[in-house]
Image (cartoon, rainbow, N blue to C red; front, side, top):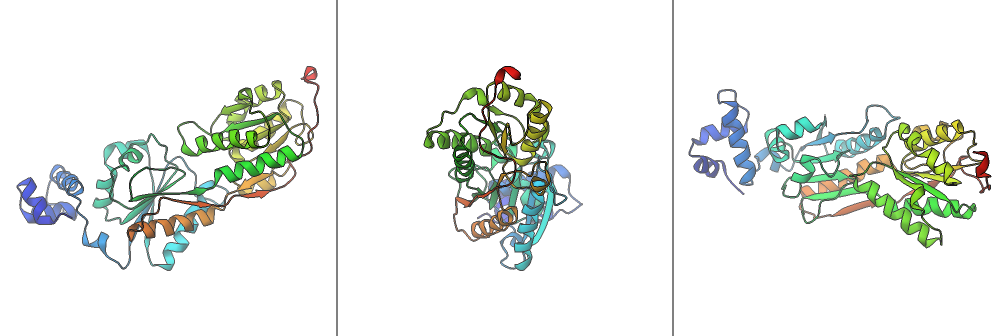
Amino acid sequence: MATIKEIANKLGIAVSTVSKGLNGASDISAEMRQLVLDTAVEMGYASKKMKATGTRKVCIFIENMDYENIEQFGYEIVVGFKLSAARRHWDVTVVPTNLNMQTAEKFDTYMLKNGYSGAFLLGFTLHDDWVWQLTKTTVPTVLLDNYIERNNHVGYVGTDNSEGIDLAVDHLNNLGHKNIAFLNGSKNSMVSEQRYQSFISSMTKHGLTADENLIEYGYYVPDCAKDHVPGFIRNGATAIMCASDLIASGVITEVVKHGLRVPEDVSVIGFDDLPIAASLTPPLTTIRQDRTDLGKSAFLLLDGLIHNVTISKLLLRAKFIQRESTAPCKSRDLSDL
């Protein structure tokens, strides 16, 4: 692990200048400070504050995910993480992130500059700059629903998608549904790919055919339903499995617009069990992710990584929640649609 003196020697500057750069002093130029920080990261420097075993300073970075009220997906995840962190007297900062921020500064440099010991990343995609940089980071980091291979400093927390999707397909199969559609989330997402593969595997397991005409990628928002539900209906879907409750809410609205009833004509299942699921009309059958436990698990994983426990993945069990949006399969006369 590099020392301040070694950084100074590499750059050919005074030790005091390096110290000022690492501590945010105002009497050196922004360019020199950035050079010191980038070199420190390159040489594997860690400040005393980052290495301290007492109170830790960590960060939750959030991108493409709402989290400010209880109705939103990220809210309980952040609460769960903070609850666990408070018991250990950790200082947690939530930082909304965007692509411009990632372009402006490298992940490791940002962490060193701000004295963070570790990070939890929510809502990032596999193509984000910072996610690419995690392949080489030495900063303990936890990702939700994304995975970095062959880096002992990075771990992944999530819900067992294979189990969750299989619970949903099993339920629909028991109700007599054979033409099951799947409206997935966005492409370029590890969790979307996992749920696609899980859907294909579960359909095969149950002796059902996964019709490619009944499988589409959308986005994790209700509005994407209008682009895909009409095709599902034309191709004879009697049930629609959705990759999120928000997607499912849009699917229910779109099915009704086409003169059909949920669940009498088309059954709908969501994923997440957000608070809105129970208040939809009809109340939504869904797969529950315990988001508070996801946050707590992310803390446990990050704490382990900070203490050199090289955990790769931590998956929670999915839970099937049956409400009123699914019913036994009813054959339809497609000529009436």
